[in-house]
Length: 238
Image (tube, rainbow, N blue to C red; front, side, top):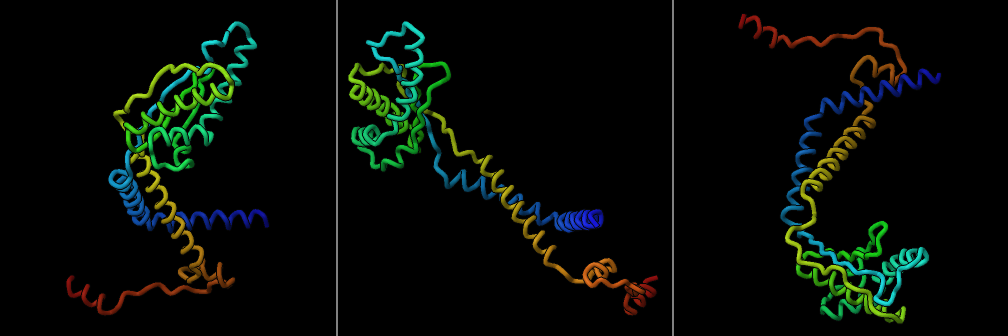
């Protein structure tokens, strides 16, 4: 019984593959349309995004790095700084300093704070559709983070290692990537529709379908005969 069930599944998959191959032109058209739509929409309707990064040193001028304990403290501080950078106090201070109308949630979503491995430097990256604004936001965030950390820890403000510069090239979105995504989406949609049509189609097309759907054996099959008019016209041409 298990072997029979397995054979039936294999036959169904083969039949489905034949159906899809017979309609491969539909799949190809969907692939071309999806790729063109994704590429065109990205190129002409999605604004370019620019990113700018600044860096600060997590130790202050009064911090002594003389032992392993200090180095471990530095690793913990980098995590604390990453958390503080996205607090409402720091983000709202940036909004007020630059006079931007971004909401807290919107601006916080544009910020990425990371510490390179085995480093005591914090990298603050901001993404924006305006390259100048991206650099200003990153620099302002670094400054406000320094001031906030100094207030919390009651110590000197950390030093700025590098200030953000205005980026000249966008980092996204990628028209090629979105074109590929559009292509795949429409291909999957086309294959899905063809699969549904195949599964729901229970019309009789061959002797095998009679046994499959009706459970009856075919006694005889009548071949298709050309109409007399076609036969006559063929003889006349000969």
